Length: 166
Image (cartoon, rainbow, N blue to C red; front, side):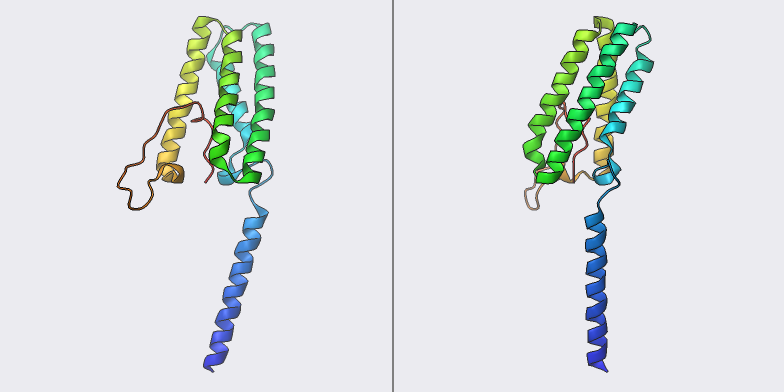
C-alpha cells in the first residue's frame, strides 16, 4: 500500500513538472514579453500622449514624429527580442539607453524649445510611473543580494521607460 502511494505521488509530481514546463514554454502572448509587456503599445501610448499634450504641432512635425516613433518601435522590438533570446538583460541596457537617447535627440530636432519642455515632462512622468511600478512589484533587478547589507538604489536613466525583464 505504501509503495502505491509513493508511486502515485511521484507520478503526480512528474505531471506537475510537465505542466509547469509546458506553460513556461508557451511564454507570453504574441508580441508581449514577460509581464504582458508590449513594446508597440508602449510606443503608441507615448506618441498619443505627445500628440495630445503638445497642441501646437504642425503637420510637418506630426509627420516627422510619426516616422521617429515608427522607427523607434521597430528598433525597440528588435532589441527586446534579441534580449529575450540571449537572456542577457544587463548587456542590453546600454543599447536600450542609446536607442532612447537617439529617439530623444531626433524629437529635440523636430520640436521647438517650448514643445520640447512639454515632451521632457511627459518622459519624466512616464519614468516616475515606471519606477513606482517597479517598486510595487519588488523589482528583482534592484534587490540587493542576500547578506550584502545594502539597500537597493534606483538610478534615474534613459531606460526607466523600458521595463526591466525579470
